[in-house]
Amino acid sequence: MIDKPYLVVVGVSATSKSPHALEWAVAQAAAAGGRVLAVRAWRVHSPMATPSGPATGLLEDPAGVGHEAEVQLARDVEEVLGAQHGVQTLVRRGSTFEVLLESSRDADLLVVDAPRQLIAGPMFAHRLVYAADCPVVVMPPALTSADTPPSALSRFGRAVGSAALRAAGTAGRPGYRVPPRG
Image 1 (tube, one colour):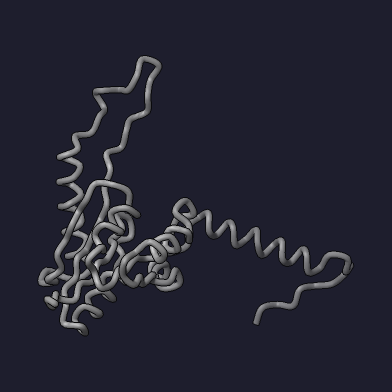
Image 2: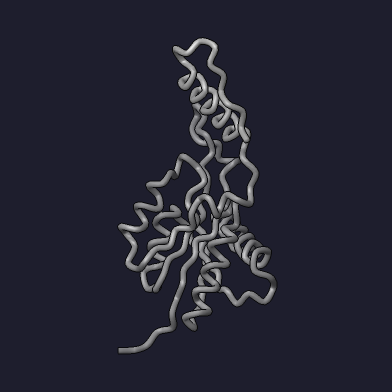
């Protein structure tokens, strides 16, 4: 049996840059005497179709989009870890799920942030756990979202939730006042 170096694959988000996942992956690889591969997926976005077909003048150049994704991933990793990070980067065309699975096929560990969008939802990480060929570490949302202020939608949701809870707690109790927070 050939000993291969310990490999940690980390998915790096284009929006958040996955700082906690990157830092944790580097620490884990260092503890195991291994290396880190930072991975990002990219796609060519199709323009909206017109009644006469696609707007051909707006089609993106796949080679240009792929090159820009490579450059941006290198910048993002350097911004999070510093110039002498020693992390390899890999950009592949495809869905995030498929690219992470394929990239981690020979890895010892896969590290990802918990999805921040409801579109991907918690099922993204759940699907990765069941489909991956290696252990998967998912950075918890409480850790990964601590660096970003709550969005307007999040603040609105909390306000509506608090109001609904207060209304439910005082329903049918005329004159009842909610105790002040202390």
